[in-house]
Length: 325
Image 1 (cartoon, rainbow, N blue to C red):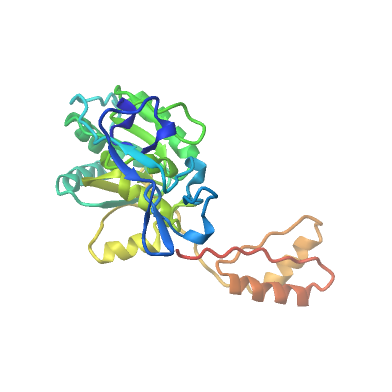
Image 2: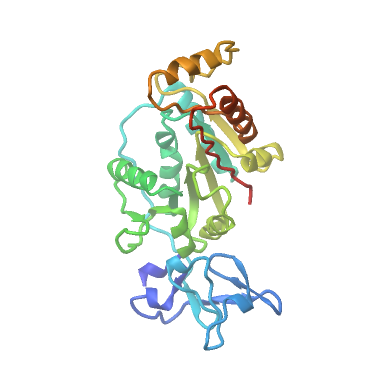
């Protein structure tokens, strides 16, 4: 039953029923009118999810297989792996990268939650190698997760090259899970884990749909062991993470330079007094024109001004508002 260690699975996901396992109700009562799914943590009104047989189901994580109130979730506690160093990477970190890597190891020993904010191309992956290997040396489990499948695929190919231990890759179209000390998975796949990882690393923490998804935050917390270490990796942080940094709940490490050592180029703002003349000249070319503004209200005002100055042009405003969950 290797597939069940550190996992949380439906009966239909098992090749055979284990002799001994911890069983959880698929759903549990929160009140007389509300149920909670024990896999994704979402709360649902009973009247909205009642089945003809009298049981309830969770619609929120149904893409992972339907959880019902009259069925069980199966779990076996995670067990240690063979302790060894599996790191094959022969590269060399820059001084700035090495500082982040060493700081991660130190904070890992202190069991701190860490946010690593580094510009794209700074070498975030290589900076976590020592923390990963230190965990594997103790026979413990490491998980790398991201909301994006393409990031998971890239991580898998790179770590497959740089680590000699078995590595599992899990996403919606991946092969069946094979127990391994190093797991790379999309954040949705974390719903199938329970208290599995001693070190869990979330890459692209700002990527859709993670930042505003309570279900994925629940999955992230449930997949970790109570004494585990959590590392966030990102190029662009979030308001929620920055708030936790200010409260002292998360330690923050920053790397504003790429491997070549030069700082990231920042935009400079300047007043353009001939803006409408530039637009008029561009429109004479006959090619489409895209203008970007940082805020919706600015876009609305600019759209009105452009319509007044260019009444014969077809002008459209495209906008998207992201709300905090």
